Structures are given as structure tokens and as C-alpha cells.
Image 1: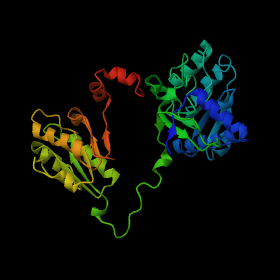
Image 2: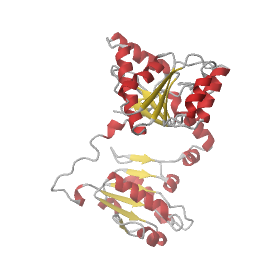
Image 3: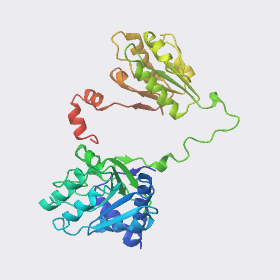
Image 4: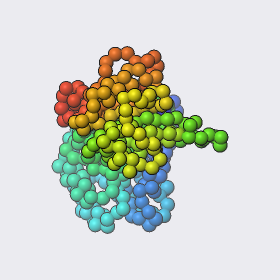
Length: 366
């Protein structure tokens, strides 16, 4: 199941509930270390040098506990106690060009600006341009605000513990968090915290695609209709069709504006291609619909736009609206229990909400 995106205070409540239930911090640290090691092995190769930067707190304990699981790797554990006196050793270790740095300097508890020595220490790590795996949160990043406390580690991958923290999704956090992943099974009790925002986990996709019966055929697995592509914008229709193929419906038919038919047909093999016409009964033959990609040409007829509006309003099957179709959608009721999805990028969201892309990016959650 997707996991909630929570605040640091909520994370502390979750941890306290875990300790109250009888679980030990030592066991959770052991499990986190194992998860860190598993991700480290995926990011490195046999005999690679791995530098573990471990601070004084539990974040450092998490990083150190990965060591026993890092088979066939060369490991250097650097216990950092004083950034000023330890700076020379950092320089020596960075000269060795480790294949991966595991960042366990600070955890989510940091809530005040770092002093000059720590800023210098972290900035030197970033200047080395090495691959970095941050444990729970990039050191120096505020988990609630997503802002660096003077400086923060620029991670390649952040393996956060339990569930993502709210600040990690802020625009200011992106350069530091890198790829955000979740170590969900680390011995914490089931999370009772809730949020209006949830994070999909890798395990949510277990069993996809489902096993198909031997007697199945292309007609057994759904028919997606894609209304997309106009002259000069045929690439969007091609990409939409190829994306649809990854979802593995049994059939895909692309209906472009007629002037774009040939450049789209020339680039697709498995999907069927047929120029859009007003009299087509697409609703009757489809189990899902996508409309909008690449329909930005000035000569796209008003009839096609009205057709998309009708599908959005009346189709009993799921409908996804994207790109140009977002500007054509009608208000009003849909069929009962119908599914309607919009997939706008920041610029399109800004247009829909009568604001600017910069304001959208500054607070995407809102």
C-alpha cells in the first residue's frame, strides 16, 4: 500500500509507538543497515571502495551497521566527530575516489544552522562529485522545510527510513535528495500516521503485469484508444503509444489528426493507426481512452475538440486527458463510478489555475 508523506513530528510519534510496542532501536538500526547495504551493492561493483561517513547519532549507527553486509567491497568507515580536526582525513579519503559515499552524518533531527566547519566539510564532499547514498535524509537538510541548514549533502540516492518526510518533496530539496527511495520494512510498527499525500512504493507493483491465461488473446486484455498527434506534433502521439504498450493492453489504436497520420504510422509497429474522423464510434470499441498529446497544431478542427469533450462527459470507461485536451474539458457530471484522470505538467497546471509555473514548482504538493 502507498505510504503517507509525514512531518518529522509524526515520524517521532511513529518511532515512539514502535519502542512502546517492545521493538528495540538496536534491531531497527540493524535492519536499516541491511537495507542500506542492499542498495549499496546495487550501486557498486566487486572490489569497489566504499566510504562510510558516520556521525555521532543514530544516523551514523545506521550507516555503520551496513558494513557487515557489504561483501566483496573495500570499506572505509570514517567516524566524524569534529569537522574541523577531521577535515584533513576527509581530504585524504576523497583522493582515493571511492565508488560510493554513504552519508550518515546527520539525520532528520537537525533543526538549526550548521556552523562554518560543518558547512566547509559538507561542501568539500559535494565538490568531489562522487556518487552518494544518503541514509534517511541528506545530511544538513531540514526534513520539514526541505531547506539546507547552511549546507547539505548532494545525494545521488536518498534511502529514507519508513516513509518520506514532507520537506523532501519541496523544490529546494530536489538538488540534495536526488532519487528518493523508501526502506519501508525496517521493524517499525504499522504506521498510524495519515496524510493527504501518499508515496507509491516499489512493492505496490508486485504482481504487475499479472500472469496471463494460456487461453487469452489480444482481445482479452483491453483496447486503449489514443486520440493524439497533429502536424508538427506527431512525436507526442508516438511516445504516448509506446508508453501505453508498457502498460500492456491487448490492443492499442492511435487516432491522429489526418495530416499527421503518415509520420506517426511510420514510427509504430504494434499499435493500430487510423486517422480521426468525426463519425468514428471510438467509445463503443474501447475499454479506456487517452486524448490530447500532440494536438497543438493550429489546424486541429473544432469538431475534434468537441469530440474529446463528449468522450470526457459521456464515456463509461476510464478517460485520461493530457496536454491540449486539458483546455477543452467541460464542466459537469460524468457517468456514475467513471474514472477521469488529468496529467498536466507544471506549465499546464499553472494555466489551469491561472498562476505561474514558478509558483506551482515552489509548492507542488499544494
